[in-house]
Length: 69
Image (cartoon, rainbow, N blue to C red; front, side, top):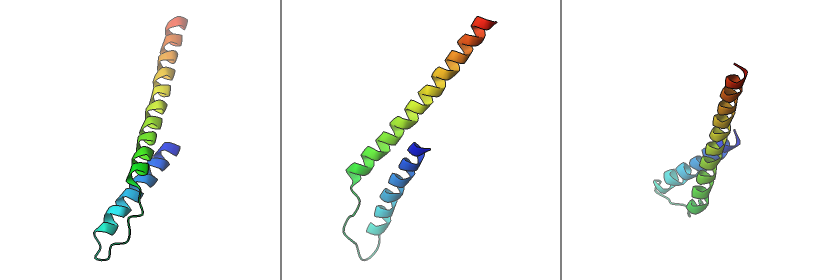
């Protein structure tokens, strides 16, 4: 949930910056795209780590069932 929230906030900030640049009066760029890109990559890595935890848990459960059966 933390990774999803972080991803959503970064994506929203990038989208808001894009929408602001389309307006007739352009405010100064207030979004640091490199920081947002790092945030998106960190969220992706968190998702991958969480998925691997579930995969390992699934493998461990299968091994346990094989041993007990």
